[in-house]
Length: 184
Picture: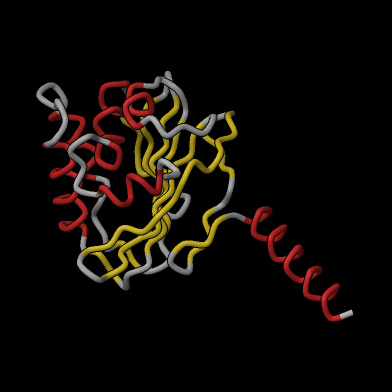
């Protein structure tokens, strides 16, 4: 009898986890999300840490699962990076510095105006429980949402490649998060 109850509890727990998403750093990341008219699947997720501080739970959503970072960066198809903040507050200057470090590792010579526009969206602290979504949809561009509020959209596949290289590029400053986002 006790064994049946234990098995039932484990099955219910596993099904609930599958239905609601993946829990990383105490934050639940949904297993699916929308990008335009497309439904994306959770490809992988992990923690962005700075030294020992958990900054955010980060997730990558794609049309179909992939562990090929270069193919993901180059793809002209819908995708999203979700950041669910864990730390009490991250100043916008810190986020912009992190983005710029990532951009500097990409071929960005022709993207200075787009980067300036992207950075202009980050004007307030990212607080604990804030959710930022960076969503790319072909023919529309890369949109930045903060707590479901659209801050702006930047057109162009080349800019999308630069943004997603922040997490997935060969020279990323976030190798552990990259592996987690790739499902490795």
